[in-house]
Image 1 (cartoon, helix red, strand yellow):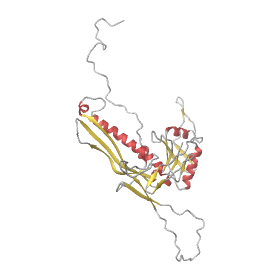
Image 2: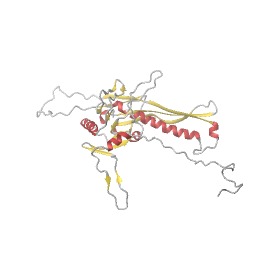
Image 3: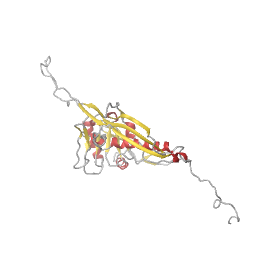
Image 4: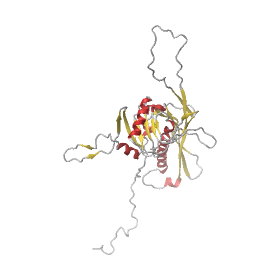
Length: 320
């Protein structure tokens, strides 16, 4: 039956308010597990931050001496340290909001300027995450070229697995050079085990493994997964296990950490968080810019660098 003639309905009534929730729902890849896990490093005193590494002489099985022997004038050679460094990179985000936009009634935020600053802070932090984990070379500021921080992958020369034609230079003569990954190949447990063995031989015990989502699924399919089902009680739903979060091999355990965005160009990073850090020259701050019109302008800025305390503590599998 239809409505009686002249019945007021929502189809004809004027002045009905909109139904708009007072919230903004955000879903985006914003986690920064690398920065959250690695160690902090002392504050730089200038824009090029340096530290030192050392390597003891290789162990020998011929260290046997005569009783009462006198060294005479023969002494062991000095173990010289190696001085390395990275440039502090300036990271920046900015925004502008009109005074009218600030004055109108909005849903999901009380202040549009504040909302923009929150979003830009998230973006700035994820930009830093991308930089610190990337295969990026470092460089001093020159003319219109800003100085750049060398990323994690570019540092690794000792414990690496490369595709055909790949090569690494690492740190040399004051800068880090991006690695040449080589031809892409299928990621396998054999590749992972090989680089784990190399790292172990060089004294490394990386405890974390970073990879993208696809590579994480490949690792979960390794044949060593303990069980694919869990016993459950009566009237409970069974769970099929399709993932591995910890890898245990002859050299210990390491946590498998899938990264949402930083490793889209597929590489697998084996990390010892005690031997890599972030050094902050200027922490993230918000600066309101001078008013030049009917709007509010702001800038978020930070200046940081990656401190690769010793590249031998880590490993990278490139080109997967």
